Length: 294
Image 1 (tube, helix red, strand yellow):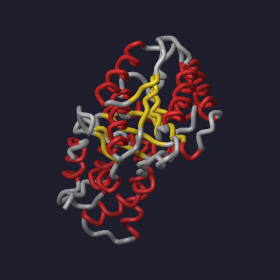
Image 2: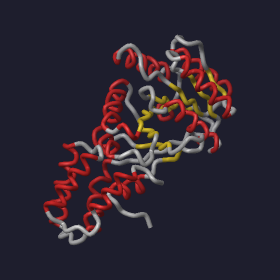
Image 3: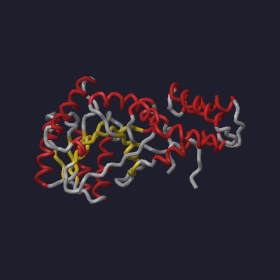
Image 4: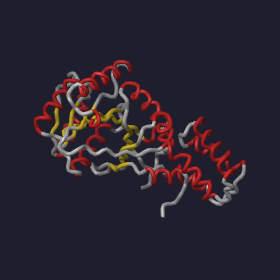
């Protein structure tokens, strides 16, 4: 998978046949900051790398790559939830407009349908007619039921109706779209909190209710800001990444993991409904430190 290719090539070049000296560490620091790890986290990682390389008497670049991978590992988590058969789960999908949220919901619907789950879509982004229409088109193409109301309706009412319908039809997973922008952040956060209360009051088991934020992999530091904002409104359970390709750098994921301990659930890699995959931590870390896959 050719994700954040330009960045990993730069890391790999840096780790190729270089002498382990101060100039190497300084260049590594610059490269990691460029890769969206942020100055503070980069300083922490490079300091640990220096100390552990010294204590382990690292002699080769391969030794450094292994040490750096071990340092980064606690910050990166993977989590691919699978709804329980015969029970109702609700996955609330959050994110700012333009990150590919509605398309990600359609891809998740395909993924879970392929895995034998009965899926229902809920069009709770009622503030944009285009969002409801788009999700409706996806539902029709996928042959999946959708619960929707007219533009401007109460999003909480859509969720309430979706849970009622899903319970009656024995659906196993509701994928709920939500608004990504209103007149101001405060209104948006209040709306999401209202939806959260509706779900919690409708008898859905706590372990079956999950909240995921969709982040565009190419936005770098903005992805961290978005995760922090939405996590304040409703405690997030995981991240879904879109545009996970050669344009992405990947470092922001490490920051999100460090600051919020959020795992990565899915990555979107293309245009079709099946271009979504559970996040692979091992593959990501190998790419991030420049280790070539065997």
